[in-house]
Length: 212
Image (cartoon, rainbow, N blue to C red; front, side):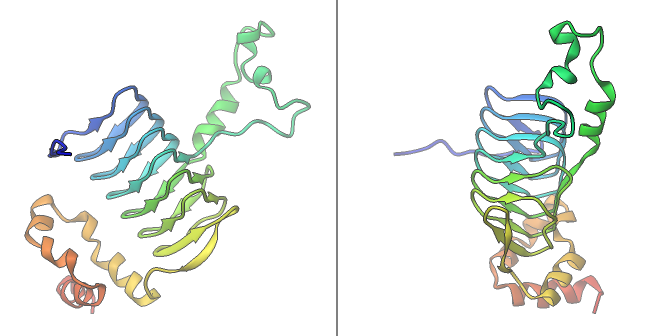
C-alpha cells in the first residue's frame, strides 16, 4: 500500500474533529484527530496522536504523545458533601445565577509541565500539576501522580521508575547542550549526528557547547 508523504512546514497542523480552546501552537507542531485541548502551549515540533485530551499544560519542544493520552485531567471537589458538578455548575441546574469562577480558576492554575524530547506512551494519564522532565519516557497505560526526573523511564499504576535512559552525567550534558533550542537549519545541518550513539553525540556537541 502506498501512503501519501507528509511534509510539515512551520505552520501548525490540526487534525479533523479536534477542538482547541485557548491553545498556542508553535512551529512544526501537530494535533492529532479527535483531540480536545484547552489552556495549553504546544512547543515546536511537538505532536499528539488521536483521541488525546489535554488541559492546563505547558508542553516543551519535540514532545511525542501517543494516542488516547490524558494530560492534566480536572478533578471533582471530593472534600464537599457531593462529587457531582452541580455544586460548581450551579447555574446550569438552576440552583444559582452564577457558576463557581474561583473553583474553575484553581483548576486552570494547576499546570502540568511536559519537558523537551519526551515520549508519553499510549493511554497514559499525567495528573495535574505533575512535571515530566526532559527526555523522560512514560510507559503505555501509566498513571503518573508524581514528578518524573529527566531521562528516566516510568511505567505502571501508579507510575514508578523502571530505569534511567542514560547516566546522570550524560543526562546533564544533554540538558547543557539543549539541542532542542537549535534552529531548524542547525538541526538539518547536524541531522546525521542524531543517528550516532549517545556517547559520540555527547563527545561532539558537549565539547562544542563550551561546558567542559
